[in-house]
Length: 157
Image (cartoon, rainbow, N blue to C red; front, top):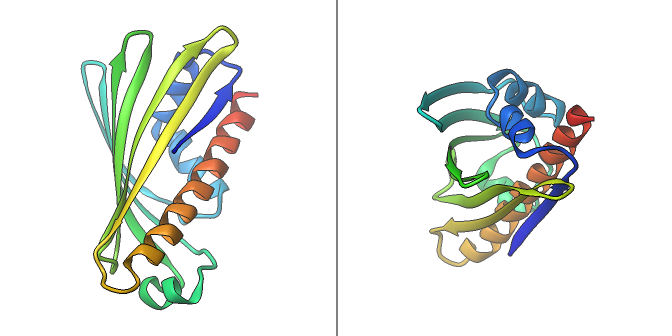
């Protein structure tokens, strides 16, 4: 299921921040994560971002036993132009967990600004608790995504 966030700002302004190293670091720290390690490359209009992140979140017991009190994860994100907007995807891999959360997203113009739309796809390869852990991971990622977009809206003004 896609989650959509309407932004009252032009696509290029949102894209400019979402692919800005300084903004990404400030946003993640503002939502309570440790300072991330960020590597970014640009080839033409395509942008690749690699983030190594660490977060402290209260997790249900089944997840806390597997993941621990500090969740460390890497995120590979890619953006490419699509008409007047942008398409992208990312893959989050969690340290110590045989699973990941992938996402497809787009940022496209509207009459009032733009829309950021994202769909998350979890995958955990564990017998018995895999589906439960998938639900927990995608919930955590979606909550984090909402907080990150709230920060974007705040910075956009």
